[in-house]
Image (cartoon, rainbow over all chains, first blue to last red; front, side):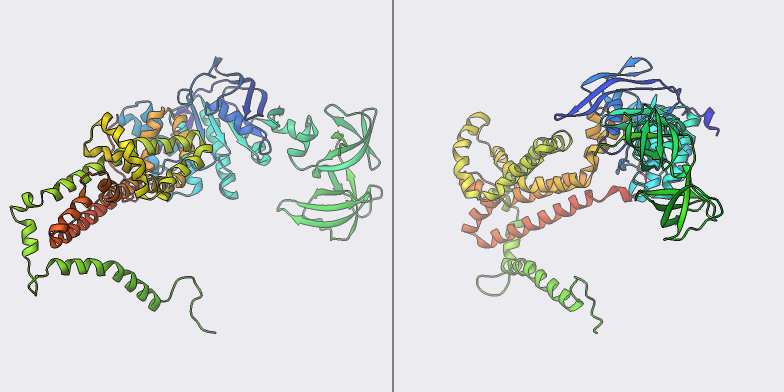
Length: 357
Length: 275
């Protein structure tokens, strides 16, 4: 069966959150979130716990009522539509298969609620199970399935009704690392094939960068920056994004006339620069490199530890001003702890923030 | 070093002894009752007492026992209905919508166990003079009092099941799949609370069948008050009926236990009828 021809495929809808506000007992969990998700697009909501990403997802699903703003699906405001009428598929963080039903019956549930006749129901459920590659486990109960299998069934259950929007609330966080990466790629393939508009909540930046068309970084109940993974990584709009997406070294530097100087090197500034003076520069480990033995110049440093990461090696070093930074380099270079090395900066611009406490 | 396992479980000898002592504790009174029911007052043993109970005239002679049994069964059914109609939905609602009230509900439900039945009756007497005016004085009204008496047991049975199932996530999943609240309750929550509900029902039946104090002091006839009354005239028959009541409760336990067998380990069932 080719995925694109599958009757399970749904035309993606446009999802718009406009100035959505949500209060929880005196605490404002969403402070006016505005976000547009294009048809068939996968947008990841990324942020630390408590940033409001799950609340935003639950507001969209109808499981939480909002205190203000509007939520539009294909231009229609659904704020007053109850969760069971919004036609949105959802996969939860905790295992949510109905324990008293088999995998097949779980997948059939949504169709049963829509009063699809038994024969068609069964056929579509089997097809959805084939989509996630688990048709041979149709008769199993949740407690007879592994975590990864349970989340796959949950995905099939969410997709079988051909919802307009798919919401994934940290669906991989309970799984072990290997299954997580595998299922992450499967979700992405399936989503692309079905063309379903998808929101994916995660606190794992690597996950977000790997699966999403665009990533919305959230902080304190609002979106700090939204952009493609590359945009977020290379041109973070704020120090928070720079610090949250990818690894960053925080290095003391001096800002003057829109240029930043650190350890004798002068670079451009990403985003809006703070007032001139001492600042913190966010430098990616791959923008620092070790200088080969013969060369002169560069910033002197002492090796602290080094870790082998398979395709590359990451080494922590201490600079003359006691700043500890990570440097990324090839595995053939093997710096020893205590060794004196020299590093150099690459790249033309960094993200900076004012030093505040 | 000895090779005796250092686990928490007792050794095989200790295990046998414990099992023996506990078994004897249960068996001796029952065996004594059986032995007593065959005794002949003139010495030796006789089946006359048993024959008397099962004789065609027994229904007339021991009418009060059958009335009591009938009343107790009726009370058990009404009490179970009260628990299922009032306590169960309240607990589900609190779990889903008002988690902060969980402690309050627990406290309220545990309170009846701390008040002795005799004290409860003192309070119930004036209440029942009102109940009698409103609902009549038939025996089933006693179920209101029993509903309160069994609260702690029924609450525990349901709550242990409720805490073991993530009803919040399950009902949210069902909602997102298009289920209204009725379907959520009927198709998702109740099937997963089956064991707790059956346990609550059983313990309710057991408590109601064994209740004496309230019925006696409110001058109602139930199984226990009837047995006491019969024992005043014929102790043998009272013991025989007690044995039969025990056997009946035991059979009921087996029956409910069978119903509660986890269906999840059985292979796929046939489709149930859609509503």
